Length: 513
Ligand code: BES
Ligand code: ZN
Ligand code: ZN
Image 1 (cartoon, helix red, strand yellow):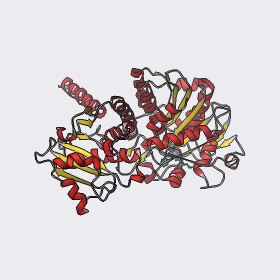
Image 2 (cartoon, protein in one colour; image 1 turned 135 degrees about the vertical axis):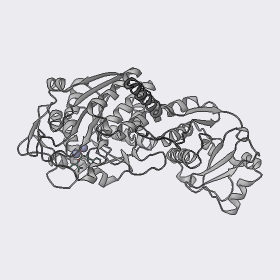
Image 3 (cartoon, helix red, strand yellow; image 1 turned 180 degrees about the horizontal axis):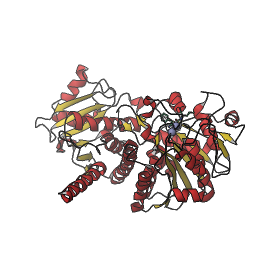
């Protein structure tokens, strides 16, 4: 009996794994739109008073129904406006979906990506279909549309993400099984979109995982999975972390019963040495400076930076990018257990500098201090970028629309800004004046983990603190506290972990030659 139970559990576990990682099948069809056999053919258009030319053939088959929609003013192609027209045997598909992209002047790949994400959830959740065909990239006939195909497939694959790991009752849950992209010669773009979405969705899974299940040890296991893709992974356990002397990480870990982990991943595709470093707090209770209930609920996502690093390294390895990458994260919970570090403590660090703990809830910067110093010393990167859900202050400043970026190397920041505009994962530069650096000086130690002026410039003083642990390597800090998590679904973003940063990091790496 017991063995049967075990077998059953194993099988359901297997289904979970498959369920979580299986993405839909994406294929190309160069059939004419009117002869494309599919339950739903999704077409897009910009805002217009009359029917745009690229819809002519389909409109003709539909006996002028699309043109009539425009003429009557019932459909204008306003952003997110959509209509379904039944095929009724007039063309090969069962239904046509018309999706509005808004004003042509505002057109961007991001608009297309979001529209595709919205369409995916519409088709699956509202219409209950398991497959559809998409030709949003034909919206500007005659223009090269490879990047549009990539954005569109990314949008569909990201927009159909769901976190189902803990759902045992799945009746009535429809899934999208296949997507047909109209046209030919887009194999590379589809493959790239698939890799990027798969890796961002892995990051989302890790963000969404409950903290009691995704402990530092499990987060390190997730990194180890990258060995399958040719990434070498070193995991340091508590004893090894002690031997290394990552004492800041150990200080934050002291209030927790779960051991910390320190992880170094390496993917060598030749080219520039770039280190991506992530904050890996698997749960942030605030420690003894405990958070209020509202603020604590989402704090299982405080390892988002580490999850971004895992997702980005997986994508880089799968895409065989020409770069020598390192992915580093320090993972621990921040808990108020008996032995917890205390406000007023002075904590030694790997770098030799000491930290005055003014608030145990400013723990991310403390563990990052060791991760940055270790990376600089041992990996000798040409560039270091850290991703961290570092401050509520950054959320207050920028909301969840973009991340904050700061540092003292403008060329890295500019490349990140450009990569952000291209991927829709945008970063906004915050100032990094010397005055901010002065605000993290301590009277008793070398640095203080809180700015000296309460509630002022909190996102920047956190970055200024990190700066004290970077000696000479060009470096940028990205505070993803806002965009890492979504309170509601929209476009290709699903409620919960967003995977923000994975596509940004990959785009940056490709640009940084
Ligand atoms: N993990 C939080 C920051 C955070 C807040 C991330 C909201 C995502 C959403 C971080 O460790 C923290 O608690 N920061 C404190 C710092 C304060 C004590 C100086 C904050 O921002 O309130
Ligand atoms: Zn905190
Ligand atoms: Zn935190």
